[in-house]
Length: 462
Image 1 (spheres, rainbow, N blue to C red):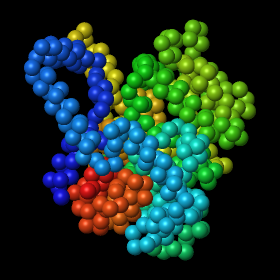
Image 2 (image 1 turned 90 degrees about the horizontal axis):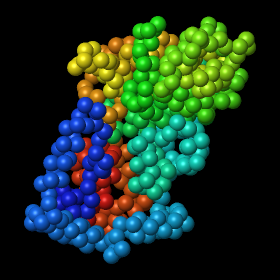
Image 3 (image 1 turned 30 degrees about the vertical axis):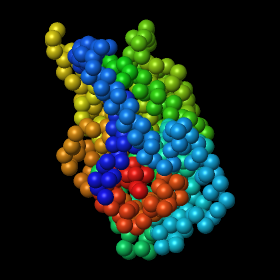
Image 4 (image 1 turned 180 degrees about the vertical axis):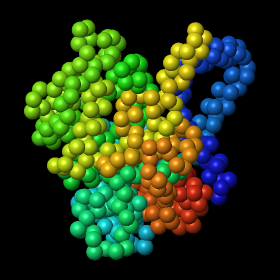
């Protein structure tokens, strides 16, 4: 089984986690990469028989790949996907196909994330792409987008790990509702989601944000925390000693305002100290002005608008916003940061030390990261590690994070994997005649419950 799967993998398509686009490189390594590229181009000449041999070999392998799949016709993969999409539309009229393992329903009928219970675990919940984009205005996690694209349906597996995460914060906001349950674990206001690659951390965090916003909470969601430490402009603020990143600050404020605009207009500011101005993005300092005051009776909406309108005040507004969120009492506040592990290592920025040397700037030295990274407070905050950004292994006890805040997210259990495999059969990722319990279990144990690898291996089942 293992040999046949590996053989078909090389013929049919590359692995999903193989880089299609070359990864970004630092400015210091661009010089060497360009030289290597020239050298490689110089080696492969037009008249080189080796290059012809390679091209012939590549062409023959692609023709073998197209001929091995029974579902692929001469027109190629595009027509196969179009035909698959047409068949899925026809399948919608056949409810007998919506059956999971042991005859259980494959899809839950529960209408919202708030009403999900343990009975809904190991079943799929349907969403609408338009509805998700309206609630998660900052963007969807990459894993969620890939799942929707490959399965051709906006649906997600209901997992017990998500229900535990949701109920943890539900107990904090509504303690009397859970006081009678003596077996319920102690609620934690700060949680760091950790776990192996492709175990669903980012999707669980996005679903938590979706649930909290459905409940009327005020949520600051940063699905790409790595962008806080990469790209844009950076300037040293001589007054604070931190590095300002005005481009990232403006983007964070715009994302925060998009969904929460009406709510922010109802929340008054609690701090009226003037906002200290820094350097703007590519425009330097504002002449003759060192600070900017908020008008009397200003709301959080006015504060955010100030940072968006004036690039010199963007970073100062983000730092002030963090303090204001701690003072909001009228509505529950949640801070959700994905790719949180990028805030415990070095950024891509460097500070010149001498003419020939630079010092890497740590993420904690950035003003925005310094304001939001700490979990040593009483506010509700969730950070999710993203091992796809590969910052290296971090120590167990992280600075500014409470002891015991880290929660390990599990990969698929056998029951969850069974539902996932039946779902992919339903979505025609797997041929029904080739599907069997023995085969999907082999795929499950071969991938060790890795969701992305299972989705890649299952179509190779013959």
